Image (cartoon, rainbow, N blue to C red; front, side, top):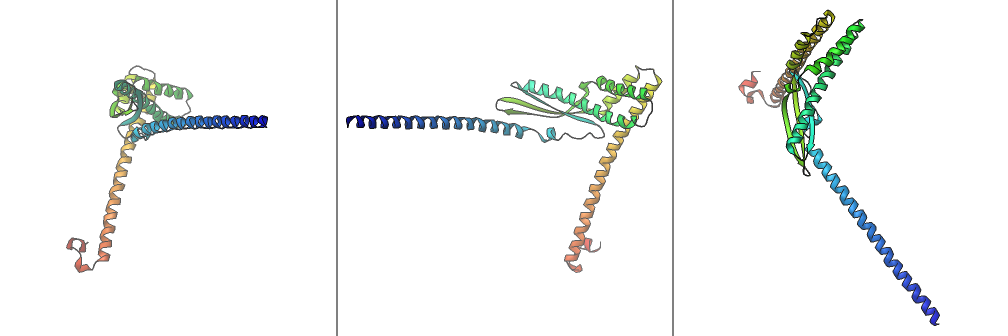
Length: 242
């Protein structure tokens, strides 16, 4: 009988210890999960803060207009001046790259119309030379914004490179070459650059004209609606006479 009681006591003790041990493990797991979730929430909050600080013009870079090409840059540092400097430098390189892509697209269209492969190669080299010749110091800063994100300075910069800078580069390179075919390439490139500026200006004017016409149409419809809703005698004299 004593042996049976002893065995029962041992069994109860083992079960009690096992239960306590199991509860301790579950508590540890819960603590780990809570700590992990806190880390995830903190990272999510930090990322939301970073995303919310990004300016709209950085995500949707302004399109080139009749005066020049735009570029954007981002810089991050624990020292705000360094962040701004890095962002502006990247913006200047970005605008040079954008201009090269713009001209290259025009040149591909032009190259399809010529049979002189040697001239095509020279024109491609000309594009690279123009981009290299343009001084990034000629870029004009349009906007810059600085944000404190979790103790780190995040800088965003928008710059614009006027077409005049590229015109100067073309003239400078033109003075360095004497080959007639390359000189013709300069003339063609300069002409297309001027045409692009003109096309951009015409597009802006056309958009403005459409806006004016739509506004006039809205006013006319409003007047007609008011005339239809009110008796002729109740209308103001200036509207009734229309």
